[in-house]
Amino acid sequence: MPPLRRRRTRSSAPGSVIENQRRKFLVPFVGPAFLFYTLLFVLPAIGAVWVSLHKWAGSGPMEFVGLRNYERVINDSQFQAAFVNTLLLLFVAGTAIFVLAFALTMVLRTMWGRSAVRSIIFFPHLINALVFGVLAGFLFNPTGLVNTALGWFGVDNPPLWLAKENIFPLIMATVIFTTTGYYTTIIMAGVDRIPPYLYEDCALAGATPFQRLWHVVIPLTWDVFGTCAILWTLSSIKIFEIIWVFGGSSGAGIPPVESWTSAVYTYVTAFSGQSTPAFGAATASAVISLLLVSVLVVFLRRVFRREAIEF
Amino acid sequence: MAAATSIHPAMRDKPSVLRSIWIGIIWIAVVLGVALLVWVVIQSFRPTAEILDQPFGLPSEFDVSNWVTAWTQGNFAMATWNSVWVTLVSSVLTILVAVPAAYYLGRVETPLTRGITMYFILGLGVPVQVILIPLFVILNELNLIDSLIGLNLVYIAISMPFTVFLLTAFFRTLPIEVEEAAALDGAGSIKTLILIALPLAKGGILTAFILQVIAHWNETLLALTLMQTPTKYTLPVALIEFVSQQIYTGADYGGTFAGISLVVLPMLAIYVWIGGRLSEGLTVGIGK
Image 1 (cartoon, each protein chain N blue to C red):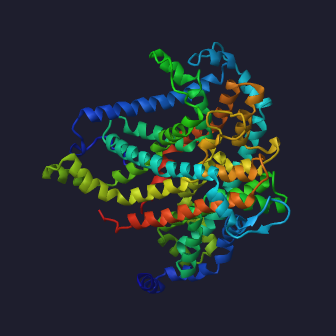
Image 2 (image 1 turned 120 degrees about the vertical axis):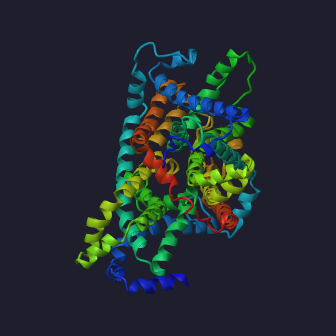
Image 3 (image 1 turned 180 degrees about the horizontal axis):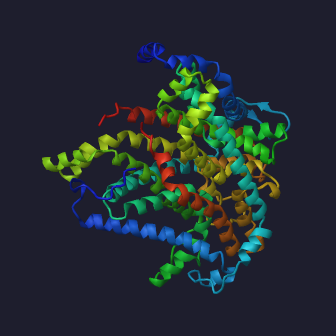
């Protein structure tokens, strides 16, 4: 009921004058944004569900097949591998990023040069992940920088970094390394909101650093963690560019299936030109990602929903 | 961002071995990251053979031939132009379309506007690969595949959820009193928006604009799917092509580094120019 009461009090305030005047402007003000968004975003999203129920090569007749695309995709070993990789990025790389970001925040908080470090570790967020994928090729190829540097330390048999079985762990490590800074910046902004007097209280009460962390810092930044978890869920599911070029050019023009994510699976299934495009199956795999994201976001909001603590 | 120039004594941690190790690791990672960026830019001025021979070397002379090759043969000139054009046009139009909508949704509170705001926010949760294929089909019908205009339209549409969300929240933080006074003085809604609200909202709008510039400059998957002839490629697509053609043409490290520099350096320039505002725009308001 609070919104209603608020509006009633407002109607006696001068705000109502403009509010009444403004209401007429719904269509000219909101209309263009609404149209763009509806026609080129919402409609395609609904269309995706429609396409995923058909067998379709992109041109020619569409054949309605019900849920058979989903069946096909789920039983496809390539999709399974890609989906497992997506889950690994989401949960394993995600956990690593959060643990590292939180640890970094704690260390950086009182460290000399913290503004400089904070500015630098945020920057990778502005770079196309494509660049990290290409650079990995120069760093990790057999005669690349990493092996050259290892050679100085007498390592003569470095691992085959870019071998099929090593490429995905290396991608995860690259993602962790280039993404942690962004989340550190966000968590730092949250921790910075904690007023210093609470730290004084801790000092006076003789709290150990761990107690301070557990009873003050984490509760007061809980909502920021929730936001970060949702941001990571949304962005990790889209990871594509870095995989597409990781390690430089591969012979086939598409990356080895060991490194695919479900976004790569969608693109390859529809557009690679390697086989007949299967728009239905490709879209079905994308819709499965959407379902995963939706479930996770609802779940995360549940977990992190809590009255914000006023301070 | 209250920069803690002096740290309150109660907040200071006791020095410990673990902490020193952490600080060491942080500085090593930061220095390596910066060094890598510097290395890429430096290597773009060295011939490929030299880079292969001595990956850590410095240029023996200031050799711009990589840049010339990348610019002329690697299609990067056209791609840079396309990227600049698409990025600027779509970002400007995104803001022009989103600002009035966000202003309205932030100022008028009815069940309808709450519903519309929610409708926009839901889009934040849809990964781009979901709309990829239907968009391809729709643009194909409209003859807008392989068209920079088509790409612009798509970029504007996919930017709506975030931009409207960000700016609506921003307009809500602005004081309404001045606008009320203007309204009482007889200014209409459009006049109030342009003369009163926009000047107050300049900072937030600039942040939203820059965030769009960054997003559109780096967007890859849609451009890769929708742009099909080399003259229409944007920079990320041109870079992918350049890298994948090296299986046939042989490694061209210097050219690749020039391409990477083209993708990265404009972002660095923006960051140096306006960085503080950006990290604030991306972090302040989060968790509210």
